Image (tube, rainbow, N blue to C red; front, top):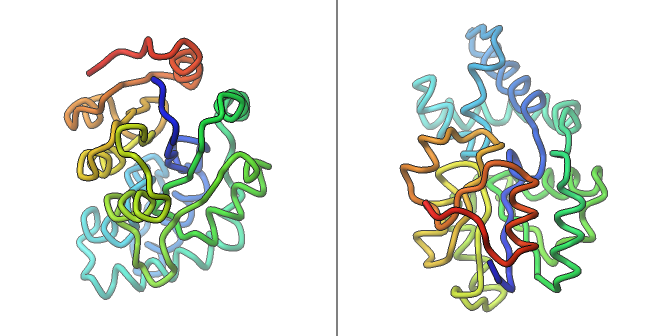
Length: 222
């Protein structure tokens, strides 16, 4: 896997944000009279644009979904953003890739202002050439759009670029922009979800991802 430019999803790929995101969703739902005590049921919210998830999983109208996102941010901006932890081995992976002179870019549907705070909190910001996330008004939240924006802004060679993520939206975004993809199974996308969308490579652990890049590509093709 010799790629000069490597795009990383954030939630479920670099960090495990389960507690912060699910508690923020729980808080937002409660404001709409929906009580959800089981945070595990809210895991599908990790990764995709939030407005889509409120509509898909709870039948919100577009207007109510947007309002729910605003309420979500009340909790997330104050507490949820830091109810988060790095996956073990991520700093070592990023260190190796930068030593290999790969250009690393974060491509996330999370608002840019939050993504930058998280990277700074975990002291990861220096690894990344650029961080691209959505705007607070909801624009630039679709992963295909985000990847396309990065390719255009950085004038990337698609043959030398790969997207790494844990949800189908990351892989679909890569497909739609003609770049390779790595679906990681240690995050929040199930093996069935990832394999169904056919990433270029499928990786089970951070350690396996590290070994795949270190050995120039012994990852298993799907």
